[in-house]
Length: 112
Length: 113
Image (tube, rainbow over all chains, first blue to last red; front, side, top):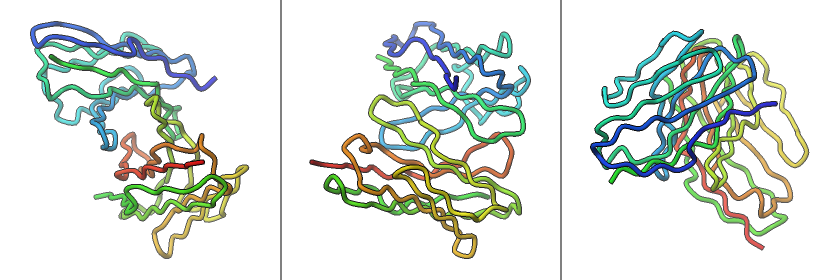
C-alpha cells in the first residue's frame, strides 16, 4: 500500500482565516514532506520532517507552520495567507534509506 | 548545486506513436539518484522509477523504458505505443541521497486519438 492521504482536496480561505492541511501515511515511512506547486511549475520543497523532527525548512514564511504529531501524521497550519499562496500543496513520505518519495493527491488551496 | 533540465516543454503525439522525454542533470555528488514522476491532471505525483548513479543498466517496464547514460548526464524516458492515458506532465528529479529532490521543469505530454 503506497498511499499518502491528504485532506481536504480543495480549500478556499480568506486572508484572515486559520486553516490546517492534513496528511497521513501508514507505510512506516520516517520522512515526511510538504511541497508547494504553482501552476505549470515543478514542486518546491517547503519542509522535511525526519523521525518526527523538523530537519529542513526552506525559508518558508511563518504564516505556514508545520507540525508532525506522530510518525504517520503531518499537518500544515495556515494563518494570514496571501492570494499568492494559492497553489497545490503536496505531502510526501519516504522510507528510511530509500530516497524515492511517494506523494499524496494534494490540496488545491485558493486564498481570497 | 544540482540542476535538472527538461528542455521539452510540451510534446504532442498521436496515439500509438513512440515518444522520448529528455532529462539532463548536473551534480557534483558521486552518489546520486534519478527519478521520473508522472503528474496527471488530478495532481498526484506518481513515482515511476528510481535509478542509482552506480547502476547504468537500462530498464524496461511494459511500455516504459529508461536510458541512463552517465557519460552524457542524461536519463531519458521512452513510452512505446503511447496511449491517451499517458497524457500528463512528467518530471525528472535528482537527489544526492538527502531528503531534497531537485525537479526539472516538467514536460507536458499530450497524446491524441
